[in-house]
Amino acid sequence: MNTDVKFLLVDDLPENLLSLEALLQRDELMLLKARSGDEALELLLQHDVALALIDVQMPGLNGFELAELMRGNERTRRVPIIFVTAGTHTAERRFQGYEAGAVDFIQKPIEPEVLRSKAAIFAELYRQRQMISEQRDLLEAQTRALQLADKRKNEFIAVLVHELRNPLAALNGGLKLLSRKPEPAKAEQIQSLMHSQIDHIIRLVDDLLDVSRITQGKITLAKSEFDLREAVYTAVEMTRQTVDEKGHTVTLSVPEQPCMVFADKVRLTQCVANLLNNAAKYTPNRGLIEVGLELSSNTYRMSVTDNGLGLTPEGSSAIFKMFEQIDEHRDHARGGLGIGLALVKQLMQLHGGDVSVWSNGPGLGSVFTLELPVAGQSQV
Image 1 (spheres, rainbow, N blue to C red):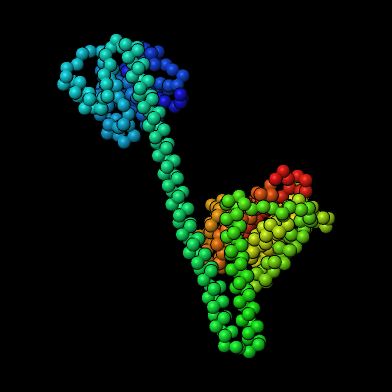
Image 2: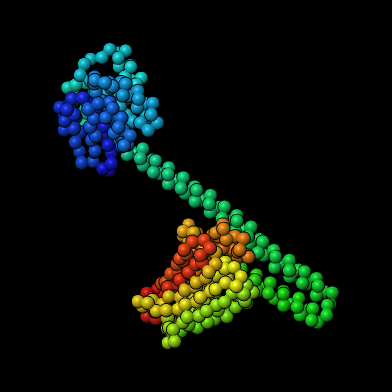
């Protein structure tokens, strides 16, 4: 049984409180005692109570008056009340008690088994209400999560349509221009543009396929032992065009000795390239990007540091979620489906590693770090 079930005992006579406490004392109950209506109200403001046992005849606030005040307060109006009385009451008097909010009357001297039986019923009702409340809260949280997922899905579809429409429109326009048989130099320029748009579509489709494979647990890693520096160098070359277009300066800091890992070289290169593309995209023109590789405690750390837009703490925690795009970064996104960093995280976890981000705040740049076990350390 839960230990957070609380009963409130209210009586102006200490001996009566001790008697009630002795009758009800159980490990699963917490008994709160008050010798006046005012003390009872203070306790009710501090605690959620499963049952209030209130003496009718008390100086100051009597039991009925206390009950009426409880019924007038949103926090306490649903607390069940049992009045404890030493005298007999007329039907009118008992009706007054029920009007004040009583669920029952107990006559003194109290029959122990009757009191314990009633107390057990109200304790169980309280636990059931708590369980229902927790289930309601869980259902509401799940509903909000589904609504958010649906919103992200709709936003993702809108972005995907936009990302596909632009290159397809360019391809359609290119075909129309080529049908007019332009000059060879012009035709070559048009073909180059069309190849670029086709490459963009292929990258989008590849990302979507990767998402599908990872979600379904169908992605496989082609692991082999290789020098991790090769993945870093290749990723830098893959992203050179994007970096050069924005005039960024990229510096490399890698060990002179080989950095051997047992991993999927293509996938790790993809991870580093995604981080570099991300840094280039969210760093204003002529920014600084540093790519580092170091060994620390049997773990290789690859870092991509930029002096770009930076992140809030909320953005840092959300950025690796699928289809998540930080609101304040949307104007700088220049396309993309919001799945690149989520893919990086899942691919790194498949390798037994991880990815993290650190930022001092908006406008203060970011540091993305990939962690990967050295060859022979991973159990994945």
